[in-house]
Length: 411
Ligand SMILES: CC(C)(COP(=O)(O)OP(=O)(O)OC[C@H]1O[C@@H](n2cnc3c(N)ncnc32)[C@H](O)[C@@H]1OP(=O)(O)O)[C@@H](O)C(=O)NCCC(=O)NCCS
Image 1: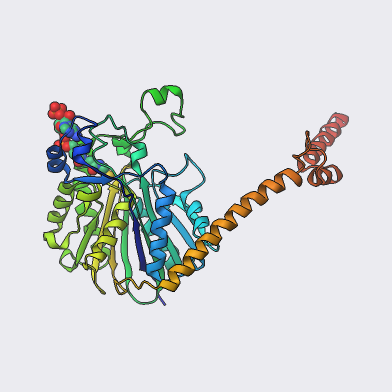
Image 2: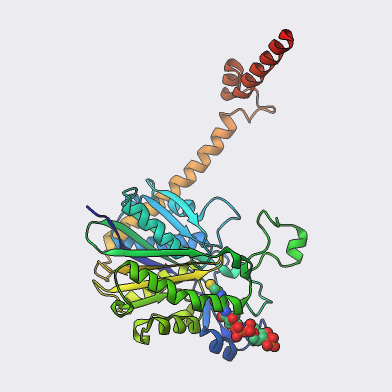
């Protein structure tokens, strides 16, 4: 029996703070007219001080769990696609979300393929389901790009925004859900879209901070040319793999970076405007979050029906890109049940409480059990075990010393 990965839940989270082009024009030398005509963007959302990539991801995840009508314990895997993670390198945002929603059976990891991240996440979720490794995957795209923008650089700060979108994917034996997916990359274009410092090549230092190297840097014109070329091609390839053509597409949901890029991809595919979903005007480029947010809004607007064929296409830094063809398989309606919201609300509170209790228990362990309460760590039970059995490193050292003296004696 073949297995397919079907989208059964969807949800989004957007910060309430709206920043219009007019407001931006008071920060950098730009204008509403310039931004609108070059990009189609009119406004974007900006995370408040208490909103982070993980908190937006968690909200979107909760909304997706509600529409999927599942319990968090049904989730086998949490994937978060982001290039604006909660912490520099670790822990992953996915682990934080897994803990916050009490998905206690789930593995968790992040994917970074910049603005193509969601397409990579979708392909990985599909593979995990189709291979039988997982039955239920929570896939999230979440970004707080405003924290990585140089608000004095008018070539980048006008483009990006914050937000999160989440999907729940489940195994089905019907030929529905993700029918095909294609991924691609060209690292020779790595320097076109980058955050220069903060990694192993240029670790953070006072100099990198002074040089404003921790912000997004972009060669807009080159990225534009790449995007226009790749979007139509990769969508076409995904359609061919699914045995379909552009005329079979009911709704095209591309990465929302720039209206002109979307229009040129749509025209390359021969798709009329009514079959192309656009919301870049409201949110700007939310990177990994843009496609799932757009899908949620397309559903809210009644544009997605059972058996519709959707095409998702993403592209971004790396350079990286991807596309997928999806056949919609579930009713695109949300069944909100008060009792379930209440029960899940209680579950999330319990998960938070349990997480806090575990953190406290770890601290208690550290103080009373591993001996760190004594000044030199020699009095705790673990220290006593180590004295009785010998620490592994001590035993290895002793063995090495024995061997060296045997060799000396032989000489
Ligand atoms: C960024 C982008 C809108 C710039 O548009 P463009 O037509 O290529 O503009 P250019 O960079 O050539 O700049 C043209 C002029 O506008 C100026 N300019 C740039 N940003 C400006 C702004 N926000 N407001 C006003 N003027 C601006 C430039 O300084 C330049 O002035 P000059 O001719 O005097 O030197 C466009 O290149 C783009 O959308 N690229 C793709 C970016 C993207 O989607 N990235 C994310 C991928 S996931």
